[in-house]
Length: 136
Image 1 (spheres, rainbow, N blue to C red):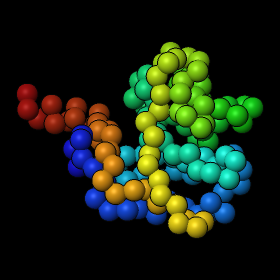
Image 2 (image 1 turned 90 degrees about the horizontal axis):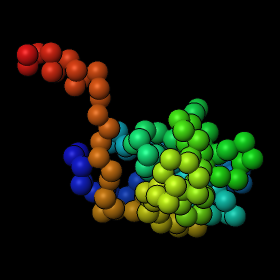
Image 3 (image 1 turned 30 degrees about the horizontal axis):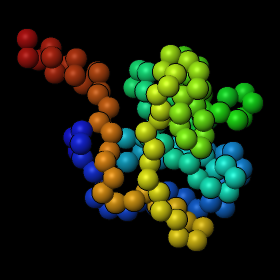
């Protein structure tokens, strides 16, 4: 898939009961990473891309929250984001926001909705460098 593509079929994310309050889960779809955090018995989901550098936010698998466990924190530059809105409230991308993932719930089950736009696929720098060497 290229930039501007959309999700062609609904994808199961998880059951709300799979997660404790303020626990997160990660998923990769067509090389695009996303995460969801359970807060106040709801899931808040975002594409795992910092608006500052375009890199993943987490410092370890499923670890997205700051030390207080109340905000999403970028592991590279410490930017802080509200869980409910994805708004950056501190750091180099202050005023920007995370790109939300659209979810649909059916009882306890949550799904990524069909036809939502996907972020650009990440660039494999090693593969690109090798391809550039072959071209020269």
